[in-house]
Amino acid sequence: MSTDDQARVRSALVAALDVVDAPPSERFERIVRVAREVFDVPLSYVNVLDDDLLHTLTPNVPDEIVSGPVGWSFCQLTVQHTEPTVVPDTTADPRTADLPGVTRRGIRFYAGVPLTIAGGEPVGTLCLMDTRPRAFSPQDTAALIDLGHWAERALAQGLHHDRLLEVAGALAPSTVAPDGYRIAGTTVPYGDLSGDLHDWSVVDGDLVLTLADVMGKEQPAALLAAGIRAALRQHRTVAPVAAVAAVEPALAEDLGRASAFATLFHARLDPASGVVDVVDAGHGLAVHVPAAGTPRVLRSHGLPLGLHAEGARRRASTTVLEPGDALVVVSDGALDLGDGTIDTLLDLARTLRAASSVDAFLETVRLRAAERAEDDVTVVVLGRA
Image (cartoon, rainbow, N blue to C red; front, side, top):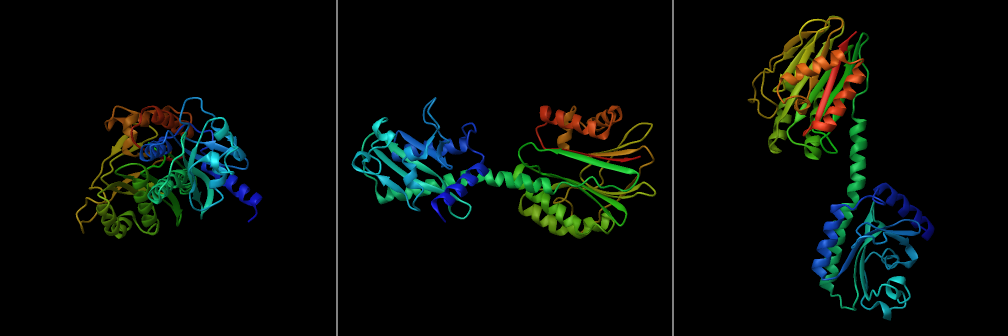
């Protein structure tokens, strides 16, 4: 690969990392703090390099210039090699003696390690600087390499984060529903990823709906939720009781190993009759909203996945959606949208009735969740025209 091609690849990767011009990040600041202490140097930086600019992610002093020409930097040398670059005395090395850092800032020592991602492409450096010449032992070099690996993992978090969000978006259910029905939902994660799962699909003309809430937050809970989704999707053609019975032994084993549990609402709607067959495993967060009359909370009849006695049979319950009725199913984070009690479900039912549309109702949910929630919030609405 030519030098120009390498620069273009590096520039594209740096753009994907989404770290240039971002506010200072603790995940990088911690690394340079440790580096300054370990090596007893006044300056340490995590930098990335695009086509012709070096960007410092960790300014050491207020108002420090964070971008400058690559050709003025020590790090232009570092990214040309796979091993660390060490300059014990910058004034004695022809590669560095005329650099602005030497002539203007008085930098007399430099050591840097290249930071690579995506199969070994160099995108930046972790470097040390001092205003006096100094020796650098093989043990120092090994320690700098170890810190460089830490910095590489911190940089890669940006790529992993974007990819995780991309996958999470791809797993969101479509708006497909049987004729005469509308289904829609939203999840507002407490962090980047949600441990809530909502999924639905039309199978043999019926609508199969799942909402699960895994104990915990972020990536560990999201990973377990994805496993529940995949398992139940393999048994969409059978009744909810049979589907849960088929997947529960393996799911309970996974949840037990992870010291977790999950509540589950798994249902199947017969569009012609409006009958909804439900298995509720410790969830108990659904409300039937009739076209007229008082909303009714649907109670749970079992323990969560991971806590249910092995071999014990799950019970099914039935709800009928008449024309104009709706079924609202939520995760327990939605209780933060009200007073924290089960009465919040009735409040949500009233909000749905007052809303101009299901979309307007879900937008109200999203706004409330952004202001109040301290957990993942998921709300799904199934309505009959």
